[in-house]
Image 1 (cartoon, helix red, strand yellow):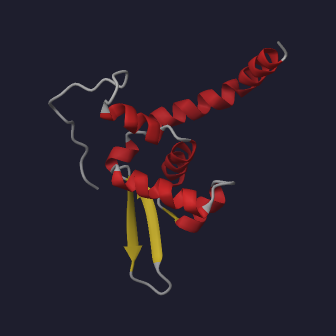
Image 2: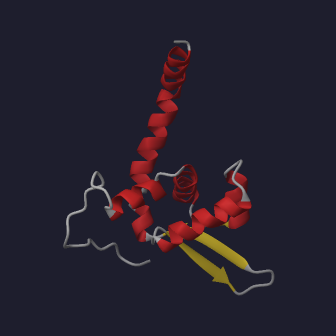
Amino acid sequence: MAAVRKVTGPTFDPYERGCPSRDLLDQIGSKWAVLVLGELGRHGASRFSRLRQALAGVSEKMLTQTLRTLERDGLVSRTVYPEVPPHVEYELTALGQTLREPLKALTEWSVRHVGDVVTAREEYDAR
């Protein structure tokens, strides 16, 4: 795995229009990206079929698109093993590993507070 390196130079502010960090937040904050990154963080390298099974409701097309985006962003690596049939595994890169704790905290928060959010939605909808 490649070492994580910090980019020096311009300061990025996701609250500024056109900032690349805003696009990155949008990508890693998508429902399927969060779940793929979380699943790879919890269970390590996984085959496509295993990820699809673990992420109930994701279509093959959406999982493929999500994995390609995460690979392009350097968060997930794709390893092809020369076997018959082909064997492909996905795993977090060193950069992707840096998201494990923040995503774990976000997931734990959502589990802990889902009841509060459901109640708030019901109260709002009843108005």
